[in-house]
Structure formats: C-alpha cells, structure tokens
Amino acid sequence: MLSTLTPAPLDPILSLTVAFREDQRANKMDLGIGVYKDEHGATPVMAAVKASQEQVFATQETKAYVGLVGREGFNRFMIDLVLGDSAAKERAVGLQTPGASGALRMLADLIRRATPSAKVWISNPSYVNHQPVMESAGLVVEKYDYFDPETKQVNEAAMLASLEHASAGDVVLLHGCCHNPTGADISFDAWQQLTEMALQRGFVPFVDIAYQGFGDGLEQDAAGLRYMAERVPEMLIATSCSKNFGLYRERTGAAIIVGKTLDNARLGLGRLLQLARSTYTMPPDHGAAIVETILADDQLKAQWLSELNVMQQRLRSLREGLVNAFHARDCFDFDFIAQHKGMFSHTGLTVEQIDALRDEHGIYMVGDGRINIAGLQEERLAELVDAILQVIQKA
Ligand code: LMR
Image 1 (cartoon, rainbow, N blue to C red):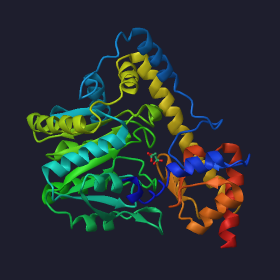
Image 2 (image 1 turned 60 degrees about the vertical axis):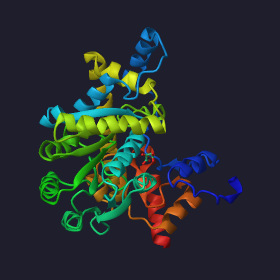
Image 3 (image 1 turned 180 degrees about the horizontal axis):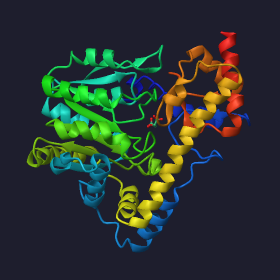
C-alpha cells in the first residue's frame, strides 16, 4: 500500500523550524514560524498561565471525558472575547477545537455538508494552511485580490471588486486582524463595505482571528468582525489561544457559529459535534482548562491582559526599531513595516534574496517573504538591516 505513495511536500513554515534547529551557526536568526519571543529570544510560559495551571493541577479530580463540545465555560468565554458586547452573541454557539486549524477544518467540513457547491474565497496571499484545509474538506478555493506589492498595503478597491464575483452561498474567508502573512489589515471602512456586500450578494463571512490582541488591542482588533457579526445573518469564526495565551502546543481554539437565530446556530453546532466525533472525537482539555480558569478569575485575567499588552507593545516597538535601523542606513523603502499589524510583515524580498539571507547570514524567513517581527532582537536590528541591504545590492 505505502509504496504507491509519492513523498509529501514539506510544509513551508514547519520545515523551516526544523532547518533552523539543525543550523549550527551561533548567529542564526529565526524569523519564520509565528511564535512570540521575548527580548531574550525565549517563548516563556505566561505568568497567568503558570498560575492557572497550578490551580488546574491542584483542583482537577478526574481525567474522565469532558464531552464532544469541549468545555462549555471555555466556549462561552471564547464567544465573549471575540464578540465582546455585540448583539450577535445572543445567536452564537461555540465548539472547543484543537487550535484554530482544528476550527478551520471543522467549519470547512460543515460548509461542505451544508452547501457542497460553495466556493471559499481566500485572500491573495493568505495563511499557508487556509487553502489546504479547505481543499481537504472537498471545497473549491478561489482567491480575491488583497495585497498590493507596490504599496505593501491592502488594495481595498481591488479586494471589493474581486468579491463582486462571489455568489450567494459562497464563503468569504477574512482575517479578523493581523493578516497572516502580510501584516496589512483592512480598514474599518472596508469591514463596513464588506458587510454591505455580504448582505446584498448573500455570501457567508468566515473570519479567522488567530492573533486577537497583537494588533491594536484585544477589543480594537475585533471591531470589524463585531460590526459585521451584528449585521449579517450568518457568520463562521475560527479563533485560537495559541498566540494570545501562548498555548501553542496545547492546541486550544474554538469554532464559533453565528446563526440567523440561536436555534439555527444550534443546528450547525449539532453537525459540528457529529463531524468532531468522526474526526478526533474530543479536543484536548488542558489548554482550555487553563484559559477558562484565567478568564473566570478577575486577578488572573488582569495579569493575562497586562502580559498580552507587553507582547503587543513589544511588537510595535520592534517594528519602529526596524524602520529606524533602515533609516540609519539611509534606506526609506521599508517604512511600511511600522504600519503593519501583529506578528508578521510581508517584506517583498525575492526568493533569491531570502535564500541568500538563509545561506549567507543564517537568517530564516518564510519563502513568500514573510518575517515574524516577534523573532527580532532589539540589539540585532542593525545586523538584520545590513544583511538585507547586502542581498538586495547583490541582486
Ligand atoms: C504561522 O503562520 O507561522 C503559525 O500560524 C503556525 C502555523 O500553524 O502555521
């Protein structure tokens, strides 16, 4: 059986992590996978998570199954975090999932069951796993215009124009904030226009919000999503605790359905439970127990919010620091980095330049030119800038 298979292609992000680990150079720099790093280059367990984990260990009395939906309390808290005080909360249900990729897959399977002919529109470019997850569920993927390589910002007019081709019943996958891989977010005005289009054309918005809290703040980052959720009859949402709680390996996320009515949303949830049963049955509990404990406790929540704020501020200051380091070398071509949001920026570097940065300087970034801002170190910004300018001048 197995000999009929051809070797699987490597994942463009995860394979980079392996290559970085194996690189013996002392001065290597990892700007690849989307993992937050502090000023020491470490990804420590957040203090609120440590404290919560201790409570979970001390109070947990059983390892018996929780249930298909995961933790009900966790799901409610996820709905609160994402939808805030939006009225859409009244018609929203949640399913705890193994990370946001688990949520994407469960919701993709749901779309396929509900509307087999639906096309899923993703941004060009989009998170590397969006297309594979949608296609694995049997859905057809179309791309809408998004990133303008000249301005390094979103071309909103082109985006809206390409979505004129979305049909009723199609699904439009949007990034709630901190666009992955570009860092270029749509304006609130574009959220309003997209809402109007969804209502007129009858497409269903599907929002992936894996980086809430890393852009302008926890509430601000969800403002567009909340505006839209209040007005459209149906919306699908995939969210994650990997980044904002630093729970990467615990695989903690949620799929949220906003229905026309609560009963409608529950109909969708029933199908999600069935899909989960036939896929992985139940999500892992530990990460969700930690998050639920934090969000149920005012003190732990305040501690978590302040730690999240530190991460967000650090990303901002690294963005400014990098732009200033370019300025110090009389280069003003990378100012867009300070306008991007969240962990990533699309640099516009070519494949040859990216290869040269890795081979000659030990600097690892994703092959599409994405850098993880959180992988930068204040004291090495000049070194990075010099390496980039060197490979650019060589080309
Ligand atoms: C990333 O984009 O680097 C992360 O979301 C990790 C992943 O799952 O690809």
